[in-house]
Image (tube, rainbow, N blue to C red; front, side, top):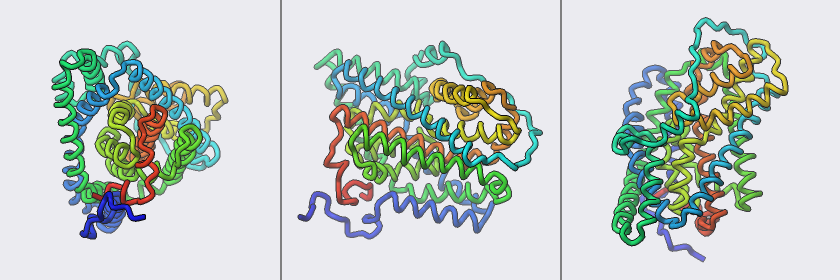
Length: 424
């Protein structure tokens, strides 16, 4: 039986799925960087323009989708249930992520046999206290929070406004309709921006590939490989396993549906910057409702740190092996507990990866100066951990949508690849 719901475009470029075009841009960027070296920085402005366009979408998209998501639920109990389920899933997967990172470093021992000196002292950064986090959540001026892109404060204000609009009933309907129209406009603007993604990704990766010579990468190739392997295992085993056994969903459909977001996350190294693409993937490719995806994804982009947790597990053990320190079972438990809790406390803070690493190193008595060893490859590692973060956001969104009965299984289980990959 022929599916005529989405007639195929006659143009060859339009018929190619977006993820394939982005992947081509990624491959060509790596090639250009390898061939041109530092001269490949000439392509950097192309990537910068793309990232600026993505960032342009973040604040209005987060704000409108959260308000629309809250008002569409019309049930404070449901919102509370979804919130508790979302945060619980993020905490559980973060603990798994750190454990996988530790296991990978234990088995593969990337720091053994490597000799490096720590001649650049690194100053410890302190994570904010619980009181500071709670006080900082509430914006004194919502307009200022929107202008400065303070995502946590924007989320709190959007949730409060959404609840208020729900509670006033019919009087709030005109405002709700405005937000719904605004959200639809932002979705369309996201599609327009994403049409330029292959070129933006090319510019970003050409610059990164050209800037990092083999002299930087070769001595630390093993720790990069271990971090990437652990990231892959987490996505394929933990995320796919939760979808298969808890959600009773085919994980292959999930992996295929998130490709657009993964490639953008890898090239941009920004979970927040990938949020517009993640929302599009969740709704168009995976079939999650606007209400659930509009609530879960912005929260996940802010507090989900699975990729950074893997990074902590791999790097902490790498540093321990580098300095010849044997960690006890108690130390391993401390790393898992501290890393999981620190991921929530530092998620909204710039340089969260370094702050978390400083906290964990201090807890197990390892030299903080060792952070300087991986400074040269941090961007390479950041690309992998951001991809894991985004994959986790979309997995939790899909699982919550399934549990709430707000997952369109016809879209999720679509057989025709052209119908659920963003080629239009």
